[in-house]
Image (cartoon, rainbow, N blue to C red; front, side, top):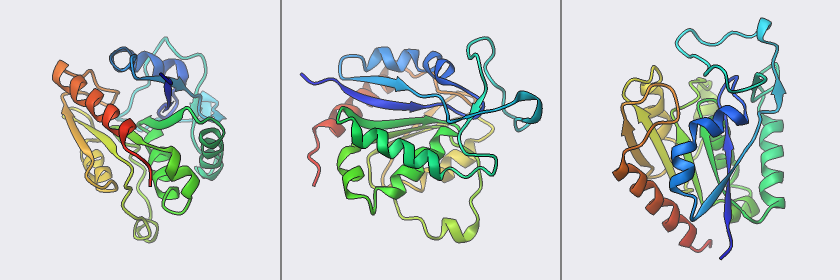
Length: 210
């Protein structure tokens, strides 16, 4: 049986190692049906000139460098282009998961899939852990369309971006909402939630693409 792959996009000032450490539980639970490829964000950031929002903390002692998605102007278009190319060039990639800032790329890929038929045929599911918290300008938000790719959206009851996560969920058509008591992180899921996620992924992989 072919082993499918899912891209995992870290959050603000995180890297692939941090994302992998946060995904340990979920990776083990889904190991029989999908693997994860952990990506470093494109831009290496100098810590001395970069500040986190006061309510967000970077996990310590795991990552070796600091990265972010988006250039110095927080333009993410090149990131979207690079991710699209990676997905198209690797037929085993069928999904994308993002944490925090990484969820912005999830939503951008979802918007692109409306007009990019090839990309839409490849992507079977998304997962958005918390949200990016970057507020789009009103004229940009009004141009968005509902993302129809099956999506899981988590909402942490102790996450300072809890409300933003709920707002982000409105960008997806009928997302599977999973509520946890997590702070701003990839949640630790209950046994029942892990079964729910596994069923979601299996169902998404079985759905034919029109």
